[in-house]
Length: 353
View 1 (cartoon, one colour):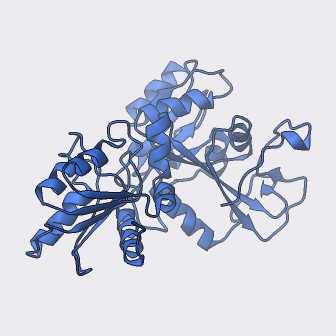
View 2 (view 1 turned 60 degrees about the vertical axis):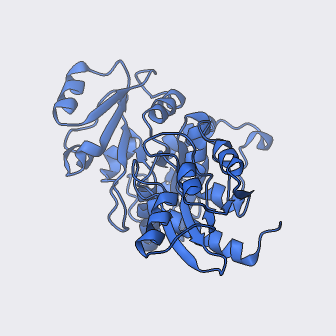
View 3 (view 1 turned 180 degrees about the horizontal axis):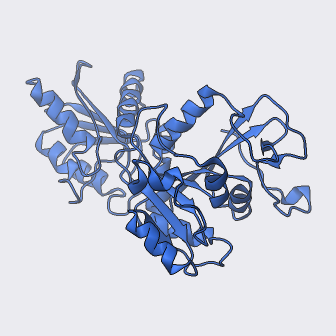
């Protein structure tokens, strides 16, 4: 049967509810759920809002029952396939079967190998009508961080660049505040809250001495990652001294000075060693290690050198480019360093979303 306008409206509502977990449920997916009766009344709503906490479906059932309403014979709209395995929470499929729902409309199948169709099969075997694919594209976009991480083990990487109209990120002196606007910075702070981690290179840390915190938007504080192969950054930087220093992770190489490692560790700073030369960190192995730690998404606020490396090695999934309406000229610092491109055909081409 084709989906109705009412079905689409309820799924859009479920997708909206799912956003409540943004930044708080990772590395789990964002999920929203709406339960309706045959008359089109909303009985209950819910979302997965905290890692390790109840999922969207039991939250929606609880919402209905807390109002004295039964969900027997109801339709459930879920942005992701209900899970059938025992994890940090009981299987959602068993709850829906026990409560006697009649129909389940699902935006997308769960790419997690532990689920991946098992929840759909269990619901159908229990006699529940299951329909899949309503607003699937929107659901996949909303859970792009989760999908990348669960299918590859790697974090989803968003690279953010701020640039003048002629592609410059700073004056020759290093001065860069501010190229863009307060509105742009507010958006970047919201992006920080939505990602598991924010990553910068040593040069950006030294020149800008950033806090990388969420101040202009609401949301949780992400992990702050700084690349420092030789551990040469001064210990007085805000990343190492402010109230969020426990959220700082320094990526270094095995060749880093042991005394500096001990000094940072004694100050409560987390360190992670990644194979590479003394001059730079090998980015691909670094991303694999971060993904294995459960970091599902990273916002890279890169300088020219790190941006060039990410582009050359094709290590980013999404580019957020903020332009300031000004020109600096070709003697100032570029937003992207040398890429070694010899022909236009070899230049990486991106797709505008």
